[in-house]
Length: 265
Ligand SMILES: NC(=O)c1ccc[n+]([C@@H]2O[C@H](COP(=O)([O-])OP(=O)(O)OC[C@H]3O[C@@H](n4cnc5c(N)ncnc54)[C@H](O)[C@@H]3O)[C@@H](O)[C@H]2O)c1
Image (cartoon, rainbow, N blue to C red; front, side, top):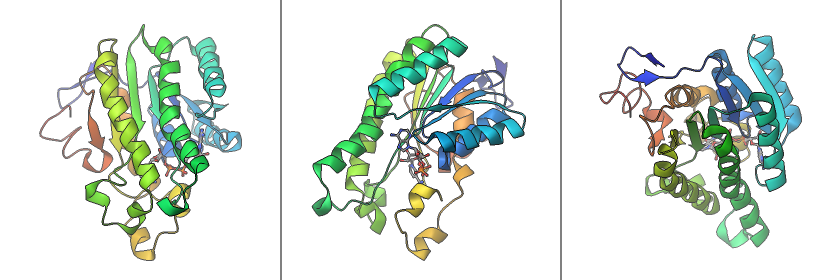
């Protein structure tokens, strides 16, 4: 453990074993690249294995350590296989980034029960399954869990036309928020930090582009690497001084993190 300039402790990322879900593109891809450039051994998992392989190629070309793994987070057997294979290879996990998520444009009147099951299976069940499977690999050393969430459907975003059309997505993210904050105290007692992270902005990814935003909304988006510094910081500060928090990447370095009035959160 080392001291940062702002006085908070950090375990750093050199050699840390980090697992990201849905990291074949978008926010997860950029986080994987940033974590690897900070010395982490990164496990890039995705339901699209070609995309995961491409990210691992980029990391390797830049001199980083990475492995590509197939994982459909909604499938219990797929999640078990992923974490069993990482356990055999690494023996433990330091950080899990629950990033995989879908946000199809589904007005309520056009939503089917199959749509409901798919969104909830990936966005909620997936977080539950991956965190549960990571636990035995984190308990001995401690670690950190980051849950990528969203303010979609909250009062702050209800005025946005796209937010109005994502009620199911908003419900799924509200569910993981409460779940993650609810388990954080129990995990803290095991030396595992657990935090929820919102981008705090529309992030220009393939998933977002599929929503067909207006030019005005697209102009207000931020680049996919916008969230990575906050993920890197939380991954490095996993010793428990930041846990049970709902944080925004848009407030990183001002409201929380380095340079903020409160150094830790
Ligand atoms: N882009 C934004 O503006 C924004 C805003 C708030 C929150 N988020 C959240 O950030 C996360 C990443 O979003 P993004 O915009 O990068 O998305 P994206 O659609 O660009 O990428 C998502 C990745 O997840 C993978 N994936 C989809 N289903 C999967 C499954 N069942 N198992 C494993 N992987 C699967 C996809 O193959 C893809 O590589 C999501 O949880 C999303 O809800 C994004």
